[in-house]
Image (cartoon, rainbow, N blue to C red; front, side):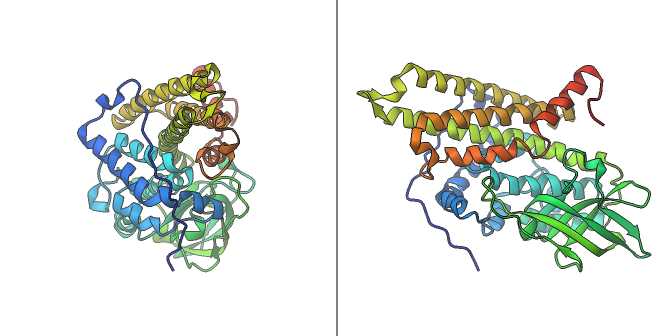
Length: 400
């Protein structure tokens, strides 16, 4: 049954900051894609997002609509259901989704970067034909199982394992903090074989011994459905193994794609917080004038706009590197780390500008702040990305 959510009477009047005329760097097609997703968000998601967050419910009915919009795996070729577009367009899409809510962008990031991408890059032709079109359309929802209860920043230490049983493998283990898991029809899961090599497997809902219990009581990403993946002697057909995935490099390449999208998405959250704070500062009167006329408020707004502008330039350049095949993992780590930290600081400053009103669901700022507390941790923690950059700079690995 389609879930019903309360429609907010408040209009989404977001205006995107562009202090350095960065739209001049975009083609007309890129602008059209961005505006189409922005209009979709304003029409379909913004009116219900606060109620969804307050109820901590995943708006599953949006999945098919997001598929229609093409936000699932847009860089995947058209013959597999994608749009065949570039990574700049993908980044702009993620920016617009997270401008509304990190949980909504998370659902799209997982579907495109962590489920469709590994099937496209490491899967057989049969696997691509079977799964990608249905994932692209939103008919199927997917999830990605790498993190384990005892192995987060050290995925190579995973204990999930497969054993050869003739015409199939037997999978045992568990995964933790898996976005989309409770609703997912398909799961791309990583486990070690009997030689200790990491392999990718495609699981389908309903396989005996495979369950995905939901994680409740989250203060963050409340519009996203998060769960566990539990494997108890799951029989996985050998044709469900990703034939070209061997070793930890394969899942890490998926994470690079996801982190790229997060760098864009966090920028969107920062832009929304800035826009909200700026408008509030011009409307809220204290001591006989708008609070936007006070020096400390102007300082906050000026610093917000400065950091947003720097982040816009950063992800635009990263997009050009990615589209030319030159973006490195370290470059992506820098952008993810910088933009999420920047967005979190802007959310906190915006909350202060809004005063007590900033903690209510009448404004999006506190919701963004709570979401970003997860984003700063997932897909590589803030500190792990720092150490990735440290290794790139010095050539010395600070962790194994």
